[in-house]
Length: 137
Picture (cartoon, rainbow, N blue to C red):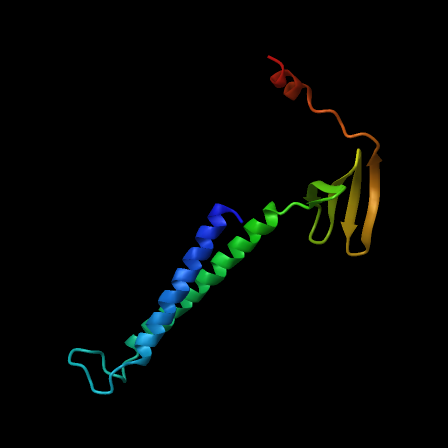
């Protein structure tokens, strides 16, 4: 797991702990009126509590969505003989994926109708010329 993802998870856990303790304290409200407190008939106290709770829930959902997107984007398939080299989305439900299988590269089209091999390169292409020059002193 990435270092940044760990920080986000730790922040979410800390926020959850704070919300749990706030709820526990709110449950222990005194039955006798406190001088200077907002009276029970007022809408200010419950409204502020509701807005704060909604903001906390939205923050947690947003953080989890961001974390899921980050982890999904970095998780490239690289098991055994098959490697995902690259992928491009062509529309809402169509994309093209370049797979490396041994020394061959296969261009695959993915759509709701299924997967189809579009092109097979027998040898992996050589690296670009500028990277060759960078390797030489």
